[in-house]
Amino acid sequence: MIKVLLILFLYGSLAARENPFFTSDAASMPITSNQQILKAPLKRASLSLPSTARTIESVTIRYKNLDGTRATKQLQLDNTIDWHLPIFISQTYTPIQKEFKHASIKTAQKQKNFQAIYKLPFIAFYQHGKKLKVVTSAPIIRDFLLVRPHRIVFDLKQDLEMRSFIKKLPHNTIFTKIRIGNHKGYYRVVVELDGYYSYTLEKHKNSYIFNLR
Image 1 (cartoon, rainbow, N blue to C red):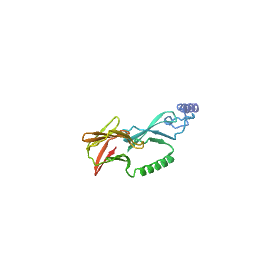
Image 2: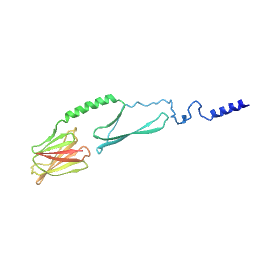
Image 3: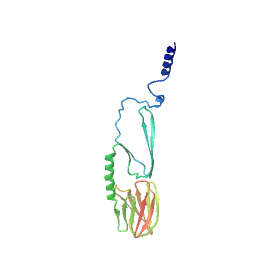
């Protein structure tokens, strides 16, 4: 009789568990699935930011687990960015690193010195990265920023005998157009930009430098 009761007790204890061959906290383990995943492997994806973006604060990835649940992982950052360049997510690390290394070398070589983008007898414009150098003997008497389109406006104290005109600039520069208009006692220069910027102005001998940021 005692043997029969002992057998019934052990059977009842084993039956109380969903699976007697796993530990007591097995219910907290993720449930996997052998369902076939018919999706292309990640190679490289890109995201472009608007021209108002200047810093990146974090990156959040939303992913799906084996058991079908979804979760997120966030990487905290605090870096400046150039909105002209896309943000990449990739699992092909080495080739992309080589590609960016070559691109960085080419960019550095191009930006060693100011390059002329437009010249006139009384004024000349040069670019170096996000810097616009204006070479002129006339003093700038006022400067300000306007939007829609985003543009830098500055007036130079000099009388000119000329008609107003617009000059489109090459596509590989952030400065897209230059407009010059004649007024009594001064002439106005409008430099259109490819996006949203603020700037500071430096005065040098016979030149001014607009530092965009």
